[in-house]
Image (cartoon, rainbow, N blue to C red; front, top):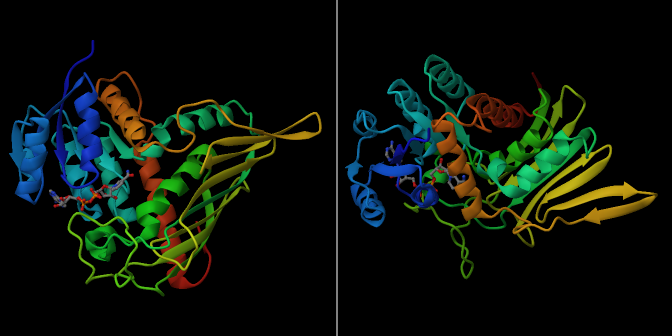
Length: 353
Ligand SMILES: NC(=O)c1ccc[n+]([C@@H]2O[C@H](COP(=O)([O-])OP(=O)(O)OC[C@H]3O[C@@H](n4cnc5c(N)ncnc54)[C@H](O)[C@@H]3O)[C@@H](O)[C@H]2O)c1
């Protein structure tokens, strides 16, 4: 039997809109409560989506026994505490990426999941999109053979969002933890989640936030403030896995680059695939190299469709009809990789696991 799942959304800033819109369109979800430290912001969403309960303290929202599941759309520094409190209160949790800021926090969240009978789905939204699902099926069926190398870039020439994103205390880091998490996760997930053997990372703080730049628009956080910037401008890393595969990644909030770049590429013994910027499979047939383009609606990640897919899936998880594609354990492994990159950069040398 399919139940209606009553939802509370905590954090009513930019990304909450994607969650709210997607729950609103899901026939088995009911938007029941919203919470933000900023009451006006929470109230505005409540008015827009006819949400009956508005809170400024997430503990009060969690004390409402009518709520079955929550989305966490707050700054990264509250992800762990809210996740743990929600699980203890008997709610299923969809937590935005990154799971939290540190490995210690991640292990505490994992422990809380184990002690509860609830699921925590990490908001690795790109795993749920159609193009990723197509590649995952090909990889699982062996069409790419053993994937031994992956390469991902998420380069913004100018795009430090300011506010909490650039305050290390609240974010846990800069472009690596914010956008690097998506592309590293995609590669690692499609490579079959190999165990990490060693990490060599570098971070750079050379250009600052470049709030001085004029005549070029870029994304800014809900409470934009350029005064504080304690995060890296860019990071790169080489991750080596126990099965011999390797992953190279570079990401930036700002870099003297000609243009922005989003690429996710995987190379296997039987074929390769470019997931971003545009889904293409590369293979060899009868001594000829072929590029194959699937006929699908979006060859790149489609934001609205991706979030709808993620949230539809989460509602099925809450109803017990599906197992999440992004369990807490993967959130923990991702925190080990992200924090490992920061640790290696700090130490100036490769770290081994
Ligand atoms: N999946 C994606 O593609 C994606 C994209 C953007 C952001 N995110 C993630 O979503 C989260 C929010 O990002 P955003 O861009 O919406 O930021 P934002 O600044 O626009 O909104 C965050 C909101 O959370 C509120 N908040 C913070 N701490 C709170 C607390 N303890 N209790 C209640 N409210 C609290 C703030 O007042 C703010 O309104 C971050 O973790 C970010 O990494 C994910």
